[in-house]
Length: 573
Image 1 (cartoon, rainbow, N blue to C red):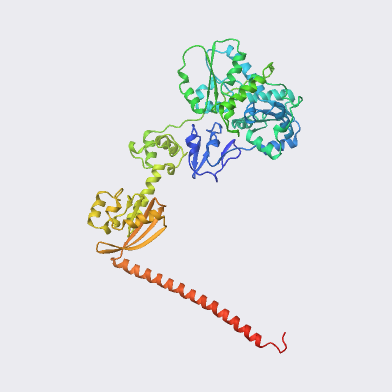
Image 2: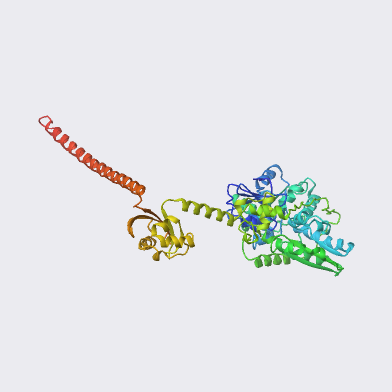
C-alpha cells in the first residue's frame, strides 16, 4: 500500500473482485496475493478506479492534514479554486465561496480559470507560428500522462505549454511573491501528481470531497455567508476560462482569441474515446491545422473523481455555462510570464513482447490448451484470455483470477471427493432433477441405474421420481425447508438409511444413503444407535435426578422450618 501516491489500494479492504481491472482501460493494476494494486509507473492518475471500486478499497491520497499544517505555519496561503466549484456548490455566489475559503484560513482566493484563459490566449498565437499538422492540448494532466506513457509518438504534438493550473500558480506567485504557497481545490486527482512534480509551483492539491469534509468539520456553511462586495476573486476575475470544466470549454476560449479561421478544433472526453482518437492519428497526411481538446473524464472535469455532487451531467454543464455568462467582461493578460513546458524529456513505458509459445505456455497454467478453451469471459478483468496470459507473463495477474479455471478445479475436486465417498450421494433441484450423483448411489438402486450411470456419469438432469420410490421425502424437505431429515426406507429387497439435508432452502437438497445390508454399515449403525440410546437414557436420568434433587431440597427446607418452630422458647419470640 503506497499512501504517498495520488491513488492507492487499501489492501485490507480489497475483495479481489477485479472490477478495477475490468474498468481500467490501461490495465495499470496488478494482483499480488489476491489484492489489486496500482502500478503507479503505468497509471495516468485519472482516478476512475476510485469511482468504480465497490468496497472503496481504491483511495485518493488525502492531503488535508498537510494543508492544515501549512495554514498553521503561514498566513499568506492562496487557494486556486477550480471553476467546476459551481457544479459542486449549485447557486452559491462568488462572494460566498470566497468568504468560506477565508474562514478556513486562506489569505486570497483565486480562480484556476485565470490560468486557463491565459493558455487559451496563447494557443492561437502559438499555432499561427507552427507548421500544419495535429496539435493536442496539454490542459488535462491525465491525458499528458497517457500520451507520454502509451503514445510517445505524439509527444511532439502536445502543445508545449503548462497546464492551466500550473500557469495559474505562476500568475499567483507573480502577484503575491515567489515564496507564496498555492493550494489547489477541485475535482481532479491528477493535480496531486502535478503538485508532486512541481512543488516549487504547487504546494498541495485537495478534492472537493476534502473541502466538503473540512467545511463540515469546521461547521462552516458557505451558503450562510452574505454576498459582500469586498469578497472577490483575486488578483482579478476570470472570463472564458470558467468554461474549461466542460468538454469543448477550452475550445470556446481558444476560438474567442483566434485571429485566423484556418484551424479545425475538436473535443473528446473519456479514456476510451481518447484511445480511439489516438490509435490512428498517425494516418493523418492532409494539410491544415487540427487542434484536439482531450479530457480524461467523461463529460469533462465536472465529472471528476474528486467530486461529491452526483446529478445530471447536463445540469452540471448548464450551471458552468450560466456561471460563464456572469463572468463576461475584459480579459486580463499576463504576457510577461513564461508558460512553456518541454514534454520531450519524459520517457515512455517499455512494451514487452512475447512469443506465441510463451503465451500458450501461460494459457496452459489456467487449463487452456486449445482455442476452444479461450472463452474470453472477462471474469479476470482482462478483455481476452490471451491478454490475461500476457498479464501472467508480466506478473501482473495470478492463475486463480481465471474464473472458469477455478470453477473447473472446484468441480473436479468435488467430483473426485463425491466418487470416493462409500455412501451413496445425490443432489437434486426443486424440480427433483438430479444435479449430481455418485456411483454408489446408482449401485444401491440396481443394475439398470448403474448402466445409466455408465452412459451418463453423474446422472445430470435425470428425473429422481423415476429412479427411487422414496422421492416424496425429497419433496417434503423442499416444501418445508427443513435443515435435516433422517429415515430408514425399503428399496427393493434392501434397507437404506437416508440423511437428507438442505443446501439452498426450498431450491436444492442433498442426500446421503447408506445400505444397511452391508456388514460394516450394520455394525456402524448398531453402535451409532446404541450410543444414541445411551445418550438419551443419560439425559432422562439426569432430568430425574434434577427433579428429585429439587424435591429433596424443598422437603428439607420444610422439615427444618417445623423443627425450628417447635424449638422456640416458651412465651414466644
